[in-house]
Length: 127
Image 1 (cartoon, rainbow, N blue to C red):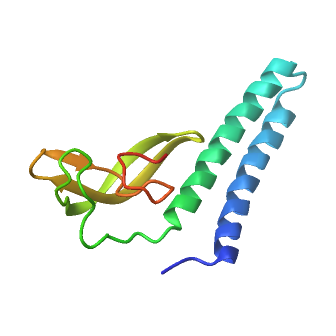
Image 2 (image 1 turned 90 degrees about the vertical axis):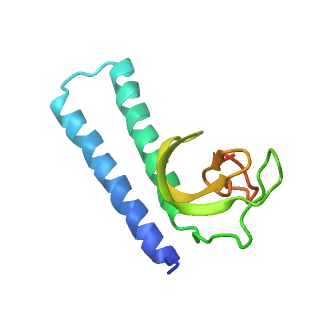
């Protein structure tokens, strides 16, 4: 079932609040931080928030299986759905641990994960 905008916003705001609390705790525990220390902490928190935001949005997408399966990029034969599979995708916002449908081409003996990129184009990774 597709989650509502309000549910997604609540989850994102909760995650942002946790990271803001971490920053405020660090600030209270670090009496005279240098600019570099402040930047390092903020950049790490920003990275984590970006990854969490990416996961929330990606997981909110409808996880549907195309029928028929996607075409193998190498031989153009139909790929067959195997199962849901966990995989970590390196994206521009960081590492995203995703669960997506996994497809397999018996001709080429190659797998495809996730079945669709963020743009809807069949491909091996989010683009």
